[in-house]
Amino acid sequence: MRVLAFESSCDETAVAVVASATDGGSRPVIVANVIHSQVNTHALFGGVVPEVASREHLVRIAPLVREALSTAGMTLDDINAVAATRGPGLIGALLVGVQFAKGIAMARGLPFLGMHHLEGHLAAALLSDHPPPYPHLALLVSGGHTVMYKVQSFGEYSVLGGTRDDAAGEAFDKIAKVLGLGYPGGVQIQRCAEGGDAQAIAMPRGIPQKSLAEFSFSGLKTHAAEYIRRQVQPLEGQHLADFCASVQHAIGDILTKKAVYHAHAQGLEGVVLAGGVAANTHLRDLLEQRCAARGLWSFVPERALCTDNAAMIGAAAWMRMRRGESSGFGVPAVSRWPLQNAGDGFVAKGPVGTTV
Ligand code: KG4
Ligand code: ZN
Image (cartoon, rainbow, N blue to C red; front, side):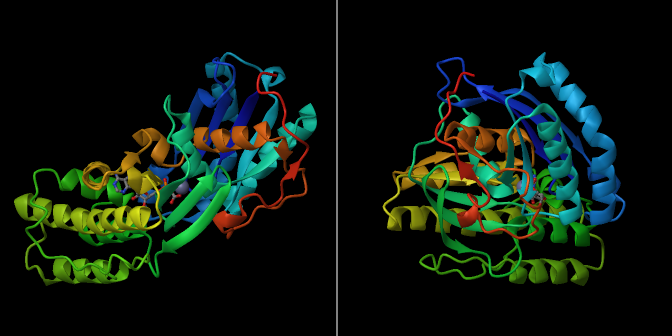
């Protein structure tokens, strides 16, 4: 079973080929995974401009399909299904990937799968040689979402709690913008935090009570922005490193404390970290330490599979294909879509073989 997968929900145009592992088809593996990041385009504006993103997807998508197929050593004749992120995300950006994928599927007589972006982020873990077991707690931290889910099995998600205001990635991005560090902010803050003292500058923790499964990052964002504006000289050198390390730790501290507490409270044995912010080294280390200290396992996908990519969408689509599910061509692109309803739009035709 080989899936051609598209991701175009925000500012990455990405195409992948995901296939069944050669061990009898028990799991999905990456055959090709290519991406064009629009970071340089949007950096000029200090953030993603939706209209510009859509136009760039349109220009990049066809050459990326050629590149993915040539990397895989395949043609469209070798593909069994076509999948694309259909939400949540920027609607104009989503439309490019969805419509392109539907076009290929229709022309080739293949099934189409309209995928949930966050289900893709969680499915990145399934691309590992040793994927994490179910059930577990998933901490999903990206530019648009910060949510803890109880994941019973693939496709069965319940929300334990999420952010009341900004997403963690949004806090990184906005603080980096005030610092003049550019976009995307998480990467820049991580870079500037090297050699910094995470305890040097006190940063507030929104909703600090561990037992409350919700997060708030707007207070941290405002506090950090005011701190920067109070400085007579622009932050630089060790002061900048200490500031960035303190911000990074404040975000990682509250995320990991709550994830560990609620995994334990729910009787879950481990935590999967996912989403673009999961690429953050400090957060990855902190989660591993705190889970280990509490007797929990932790799992974080490799960095390139944490930020937006099409392999994760292919992995999620592969899982649904294996259950005999596909979407049909009538499903729309949607800007909002709760993960609990990730199965919306799919019809099951019964399990299909994994080694077509
Ligand atoms: O999942 P993603 O690629 O796109 C969305 O679905 O939102 O996440 C993007 C977010 C941005 O806010 C970016 O600043 C953050 O992930 N990010 C990081 C790092 N790399 C990306 N945040 C902290 N540290 C990083 N190394
Ligand atoms: Zn994402």
